[in-house]
Length: 350
Ligand SMILES: [Zn+2]
Image 1 (cartoon, rainbow, N blue to C red):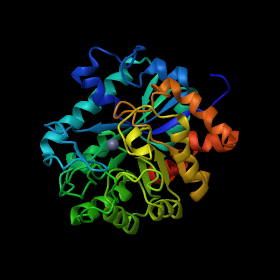
Image 2 (image 1 turned 60 degrees about the vertical axis):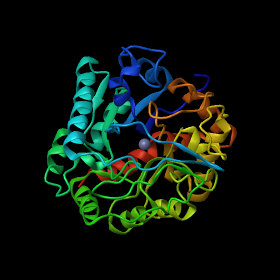
Image 3 (image 1 turned 30 degrees about the vertical axis):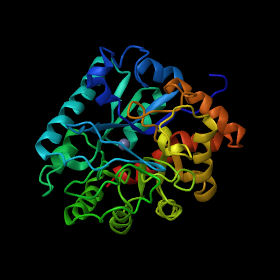
Image 4 (image 1 turned 120 degrees about the vertical axis):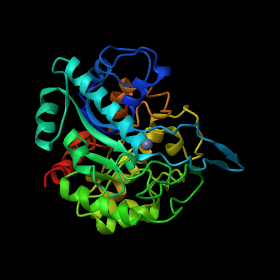
């Protein structure tokens, strides 16, 4: 690192699924590898202190990406069965536990905000278990406490598909996020139950009507773990100015994705992206909402990221770019981890 950069606590990665995936070959999270975006040695070298680790149940078929005249759209894949999602989530959570067990104290799966802060300060890589899409939760919520007891501390109501709780926004560019209906009754009940238990409700991938339902129901700060500014890249996954404002009013936080198709003004899946494009989104949200409401949500190992970052080792360069925009040390520390910690302090405690 050329200058001391603050440790990063990150809003989203899909590394667990990538580790299970055949295409990752035999890469181990505990050994430095050229594959994937994130592993323990690369994280430590880059000042990446941990974050939300997603349990995502993949679709059984490939996504059907269709080019349109001025962009693309991806029709919703079939819904995912609860039992299947519960099985995959359990497998991914077990993988995370095995990493913790094998890492000799270097990785900690955390359950409280205090534990998270302590481990982070000591330089232990922290992992906050996150369900990306609530399909593993039974629609009557009868296994939610079980999932909480197993360690789940954050739930994204939907991925970009429909489920019993809500309507994930289909991947589409250009597009408003206002596609499809709001939360179902089960979705509304799930938000309340998460508030009661101390589980983060993540609005990433949620359509706009669902977002406003969460804003109305939730008693916790609004959280969108990996997204970007619709004003700069009009993809369906990004937040409009009104949505951004609502996050700030609730005291919440937006994690800026590193996914190129939600960063590039042209929405293309092309990784030839300067760091300044990513920093434009951070700066836009910080200018509009104040620096207390913006953080990172890398989506490492879940998407195509700028080739200028490469993998987690590019994070120090990102801080250099942020410094050129005038962010000082205190502001960078809030963006890097302080804002997530503030929201998690408030949300995980009940
Ligand atoms: Zn995602």
